[in-house]
Image 1 (cartoon, helix red, strand yellow):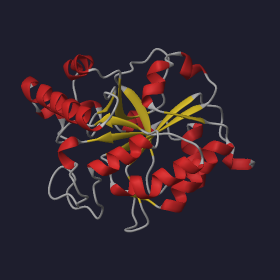
Image 2 (tube, helix red, strand yellow):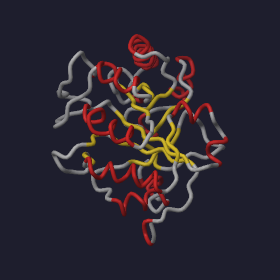
Image 3 (spheres, helix red, strand yellow):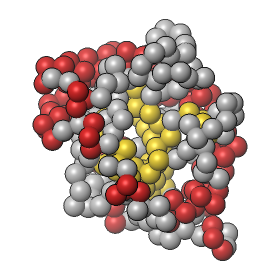
Length: 252
C-alpha cells in the first residue's frame, strides 16, 4: 500500500473504540465496514495484536518493537460483541474490553440517563462477557457505575474499584488486571486515585489522554488514540502515523 496510506513505524499503539455499528451515523459510531478496514489495515502494516495484560507482561520491551497494537473497547456495547468480535477473530486478533459492571445485566438493554445519556445502542450482557472471554479476549474493569472519579470521595473511589473487581471475579476466569478510567482525561482522576489501583490488582490503566506509550511512562496512566466515526482509512492511517498527536496538548 503506497502513498498517504503508508504509516510510519510506531512500536506500540493503544486504540480506543466505543460503538461500532452502522446506525445511527455520527462521530460516536464507527461503521462496521470502516472498523473492518481498520483491522485489515493494521494487519497489512504488520501490527501484532495484543491485550493490555500482554502489554503488562512484556513491558517495557513491548514499546521497542516489533509493531504492536491493542484494540480497546469501552463500556461493553452489544455491537462490540456482534460486529467487532467476528472481525477480530477473522484476523486472528485479540482485544481488551472494559466493563462497567453496574451497567451489565442478564439481558442486553439500552441505557437510561447518566452516564451514557441518550443513546441508540444496547449495552452488553453477562452472556456477552463470557462470549468475549471464551473467544480469547481480555476483560478489564471500567469501574462499577462509570463515575467521574475526581468527583468522588476516597471511600467512594474504593467502593467503585472494589465492587467492579469483585463482580468481575464472579464472571470471568482470570482476575481483571487492566483498568480504564471513565472519561479518562487528567481532570477526571487524581494521583491518589492512580495510587489505589494496585491495591485491587490492576497492573495497567488506560486514560483518554491522546498519545502512544513510551518506556518511561506509567503503566497506570497509559495514553490511547481515540477512533471515531469520522475516521475513514486515510484519517486512520494519519492517526497511526502521528499526524494528530498535537491533540495531546489540546484535549487535557
